[in-house]
Image 1 (cartoon, helix red, strand yellow):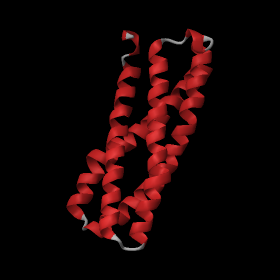
Image 2 (tube, helix red, strand yellow):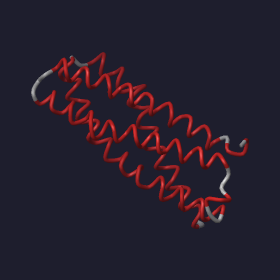
Image 3 (cartoon, one colour):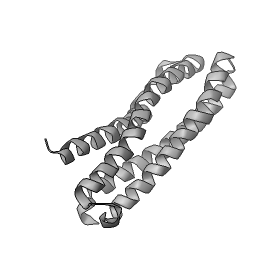
Image 4 (cartoon, one colour):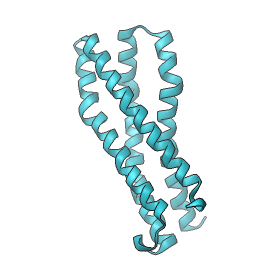
Length: 154
């Protein structure tokens, strides 16, 4: 495998983990949890799911810019020669990371505190905020993947 091939593979796998994980959580896990679990159990499930999933998202958050910059230097010899779609992808990465950090740093601790205190109404409201931000992040991530897949069109 070439150096570019290795870096590209790490990049794609990192994006797959992050965006695919959000897609699974939003489209499969959330509806199943709504059907199968009562409110308190559902909130406890999400605390555990976020804790496990966010470890992997942090791996992606670190690997994506490292591999992205690596690809830029290997393929384009620097930022100046990189096509516009690469700059758009970098901007969308920043948006996704900001949304993720907001959830991780502000909302997840609030959800954990509410669940630990068995304050189910506050927990449900906080989970609703998280759900909206994850939904926005999923849309941004899908747009980013679409841009990457359609890159010859730019």
